[in-house]
Structure formats: structure tokens, C-alpha cells
Amino acid sequence: MKKRIILSLLAVSSLYADAQIDTIKEQLEKQKEATSKLEAKLNTLEEKSTNNSASFSQNAYLPDMAFVFNMSAVGRDVNNDDYASYELPGFINAPQKPDLPFNANRGFNFNYAEVSLYSVVDPYFEALAIFHISPDELEIEEAYVQTTSLPYSLKIKAGKFKSNFGRLNAQHQHIWNFDSQPLIYKGLFGPDGLSDAGIQLQWVAPTDTYVMFGSEAMQGSNDMSFGDTSKNNLYIAYIKSSIDVGDELSILGGVSYAHGKNTTSNVTDIYGVDLTVREQIDSYSALVWQSEYLYRDMKESDTTTYRQAGLYTELNYQYNNNYSFGVMYDLISKNDTDLSSYAGIDTNDLDRYTAKMDYKPFPMSRLRLSCSYDRSKVIAGERKNIKQVMLSLNIAAGAHGAHNY
Image: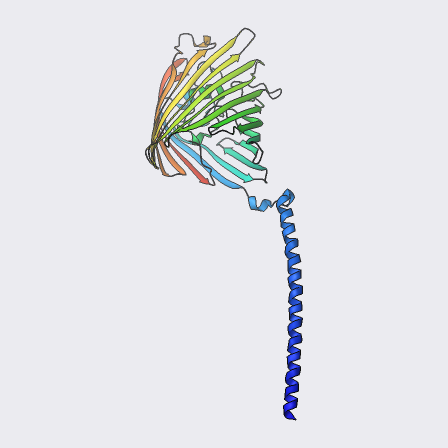
């Protein structure tokens, strides 16, 4: 009897366990089915999120910030008051005074600080803003948006920006190989160069050799060569190309053209040619030769056109990551303009010689020692040969993009 009861209990237990297993299997199948449906729904939502720009997360693209600081100590054989009133015959004439944002005084100069913000805006635009802080003012040096995904290698920029005319114009002062602006750039464009509100279109040709075509429409507020701002009056075009000759030699060149109206409502045309040659000697050293020639036709009236031109050429030797050396020569080579106020003064061969040494303890900091012999200035009715020695310090901190060579 006891044996039967035990066998019956075992049979009932076995049947109950089988029923539980079936129930669990059924629940698992239902959960698998529900999970499959949820996964399919998740995949659908992710595809929609990828293809829908409205779901773009701006939080993932917070702006990068960078800071630049520049100061100098200057020794010069002309006092500050006289230097602040120098003339560059045919370009900066009394009573006009030169704009001296950099290295103006003997002794110490805090030249400027720059704060820049860069961010990817969305899948289609990136934005950059650079604020220039000097002892006397805060200004927006550049602020623009630029496309990132146009077809056919096209790119559009809009806002306030430095024109890509020539080689040097688009670069900020702390990027220059020498602290002083070339004479022809100073005479034609002033210390800010061609920097204005406008729009830019660039196209890179689909060729093995890099060839870029660019055009710009700008307001034309630069009154050194243009200045008629009754409407946008400045139009710029350029072609730039580069080739590699072997593994060590690179050649970069360009031609540029600017057309606009000046303050007399007449036309100014400026032509530019630039050439840069770089020989990479080894992993850490290189030799770079950079030159530009600029020519201006500036119409003053129906019967008067001023023709002026100049060039600079510089040779820079990077010895290693820490030390580099360079020499520069710049010249006003043509000055067919009204020079009647300089009667009795020799205004030929307005030129300057400069030599420098850079020391970079790290890529973001630089000490530069330079000396120059300047024969381009007229001060108090007399042409002066100015000798200058300068030590400058430049610090860059934060997210800072690489510079072109």
C-alpha cells in the first residue's frame, strides 16, 4: 500500500514538473517574440534618427576654444612720437598717420590677445569666430559659417572673414614668419589686410594635381585701396595650385585679382602672384622660400591713374623642432603716383631688410629675436634709415588647428 502511494506521488510530481516546463517554454517563446518586435522597432527608430537632421544632437558638438597672446620688447633709433607719424610715400601720406597695432613703441608692447571659438554646427555647417583684444578695443576679427558637405568639391563661406587673396592675407599676424607686415601689404591694404563681410565660393578641381578656384564678393570697406561702401563693391578671384616633386620638394603657387571702387568712386584693380617652395631636408628640418608680388592700378579721376607695385621675398630654414632662422627683403618697386609733397626727398627704392631667429620650446610657444634695417619711411620731411631690434613672445593655448606651411 505504501509503495503504491509513493509511486502515485512520484507520477503526480512528474506530471506537474512537465506542466511547469511547458509553461516556462511557452513564456520564453512569448518573450522572444516580444523582444524581436522591440528590436525591429528600435532599428526602425535608429534609421529614422540617422536620416533626420532634426534629431541631430548639438550637445555632442560643443565649441573648441583657443587663446593667443602676443607681446614684444622693441629697441628702435626713432622715438615713439616720430615713429607714430611716419609716412610711406605714395601710400601713407601726411596728415594721414599709420595704423600701428603691433610693436608700436620702444620698450614693451602688449600687442593683442585673440580668443577663437570653433564648432561643427550640424551635418552641413561649421562655424568659427575670432575675437581680437588689444589695449584699446575689442573687435570681431572673423566670424563666419562654412559648408561641409556640398557636392562636387564645392565650399561656401559667409560672414566676416579674411580674403584668400594672395598668400599672406588670409593668415593672422601670429602665423607670419616675420613680425612686421610686408611694405606692399601695409601700403595697399593696411594692417588688417582684406578682411570684410561677404561671401566666398571655392571649388577644388577633380584632378591628380591640386587646383583650387575661388571667388569672393565683399563689402569693400578697406579704404586703403577701395572704400566705396554705398553697396558691396569688392570682387576677388584667385587660382591656387600645388605639386609635389619627389618626396621632399613641394611647390605652391597662385594668382589673384581684386576689383572694386575706391573712395573717389573710381575703380581700383589689384593683381597678385605668389610662390612658395618647400624642401623637406629630413624629419625635423626644412627650407622654405616664400615670395609675393602685388600690383595696383588705382584710378583717381577720368584722366589720372596711379600705378604702384611691390614685393617681398623670404627664406626660412627650420633647423629642428625648436630652432629656425630666416631673412626677408621687401621693396616698393613701382610708385607712379602723386609725390609732389615729397619734393627734394629721394622716394626711390623704398625697402627693408630683416633677419630673425625663432626658438620654440614647444609647438604652442615661440620666442623670436629679429633685427631690421628700414629705408622706406619719411619722418618730419626727411627720409630715415631706421634700425630696430625686437624680441617677441607668442603663446597659443587650447584647441588650435595646424597651419599651412
